[in-house]
Amino acid sequence: MSGCKLTARVSGVGKALPERRLTNAELEKMVDTSDEWITQRVGIKERRIAAEGEYTSHLAIRAAADALEMSGLKADEIDLILVATSTPDMVYPPVACLVQKALGAVNAGVMDISAACTGFIYGGSIAWSMIRSGLMRHVLVIGAEINSSVVDWKDRDTCILFGDGAGAAVFSAHESDTEGVLSIKLGGDGRFDELLCLPNSGCRPFPEISGRHIVMQGNETFKQAVRNMYECAVSALECAGLTSADVSLLIPHQANTRIIGAVSKRLGLPDEKVFVNIADYGNTSAATIPIALCEALEQKRLKRGDVLVIDAFGAGLTFGAMAIRWV
Ligand code: ACO
Image (tube, rainbow, N blue to C red):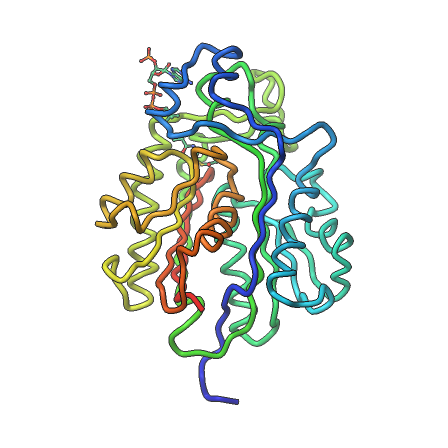
């Protein structure tokens, strides 16, 4: 033993996106909206939509396989698979089980996480805790969604916002006092349970709402998102003995460029320290952060020693942030 603290680092990442692009121009033909409105108010230009027969597990498996390959691990070295999703293929078996089967990760425990758009950070925090406690060495965390299956395509308030996709990261044991995951802050506020819901998706019937689709109070959700994402990022940094001045890159949940702009401004972060890819994919819920992390690495936006903050917000309300010194 080196005497260093046991922590976790991200040893591999991957992403998977459906091929089909749904542009704002196409949405203009489906609902009363415009490319200009969507671009200005939300910052989305197009989103990906799953093909018929393409499910959350398919995207999760593709993203996970890439993350595993990058980590250099064999599938049987994975100790735990966590899939954050609000749109599983079915309630059970968990999507994590389908990923395990496809990868041949025969030694892994499996579990899905229901924490809406914050699910990847909740998954990352479980991975960190398991690794830090010495119980596990490699945990695969996936965020995967087929949001197109729960969108009301006649509701212009919501149908323009969401897209399908998956991202994955392998968290691996790392001995260091200064590098890897530094801190987490998790939070929730059930008082706002009605701001963003998916009625008719569980045992409770909602006879007043026909079918199963996202229902959202956009304005109030917006305000809560800004406040909670800001406060979570500050708390996570404080726990790590850092301030926003130390941040090299913020990867925020991609729900709206104006939410991202407001959070970054409060943190005092210039645009070049904030990763934004919402124009290409829309809001992929639990998948936004791992997809963005994958693209940040592809674009060489992170190098060893950089302080990365991932920061999310979702229905529930749920929120959370994690600070990582990149290695
Ligand atoms: N196209 C054109 N006009 C529209 C559209 C549209 N797609 N949607 C709404 N409008 C209209 C409204 O009807 C309204 O018209 P009115 O003034 O005549 O009543 C006007 O635009 C303004 O509507 P607002 O709701 O006030 O618009 P706002 O600027 O708040 O933007 C939005 C709406 C984009 C939904 C914003 O509130 C938002 O991003 N909220 C947060 C959403 C979010 O983050 N959701 C997910 C978080 S958690 C998760 O990811 C699961």
